Length: 358
Figure (cartoon, rainbow, N blue to C red):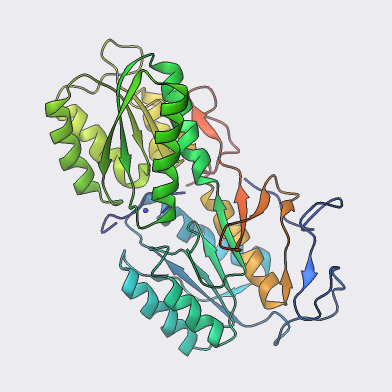
């Protein structure tokens, strides 16, 4: 997952005024009447109004702290009556309890960032039984009914990190500090990075640290790995929000934190797009990060839950906000939002959400 008691560290937009453009675009349809056109005349029970519960996975990561800050702003701009956010504190079972508590409070919609792609099904089933639509943010559930998944392409995250490292390092050992493989995000990033290196950069050897979105685990295992492999040339951190600080601290403690351009510099690519990563890029401590759109996660989470409460659904195709709605193998729809690679060349771009955080 975009990631803890230290889990996660995870994931600019324009207002969505229509869901599609052209014959193959994401045409808006009404679930209530089964039409292939948006008549705008019939909504779900309650006409799309009512309280919306927003459930966070954790608040120990700067990424999720930023998302949490965006939620009330985006709820207001999208006309959604959102309750105060609930923090599941990195506990999948607590998240199911949080969903049930929100349902018992009579919410008419839920926006949830799942901690566990499989475990979340129990909560989704409870919501479906009560007729409450759910939008998933950052993590796609393996099973269960959701109106939309708001997420960036996590396979692309791993591929972008691989391509960047491969272009900088002709041969040698690289490390990927992985997320929780119980999360589809951890699986997607890990498998994509591994496959890309094997296909495109066969002279690189990938070493792996399964860190479960936990900063302490990442630091301890990285320390051990570096003792055995002091010739590491590159690192891919799957979640800067939890892995950035411990990685830099571990390298520094071993005298291995060399700035970009200096002899012995270890090329580092991160994932999240938080301000702390941008500062590290400017200092030459790391080289790049993939920017998960925390602002757009909040914005389109609110947009889609409002649409779902009005009885609307969507179809696969390009949107008018630079993304594409795709149908996952499970049949769930996912709006894959843009997530640019950030390097020293574009780190000061004012359009990046990490540069707008106060």
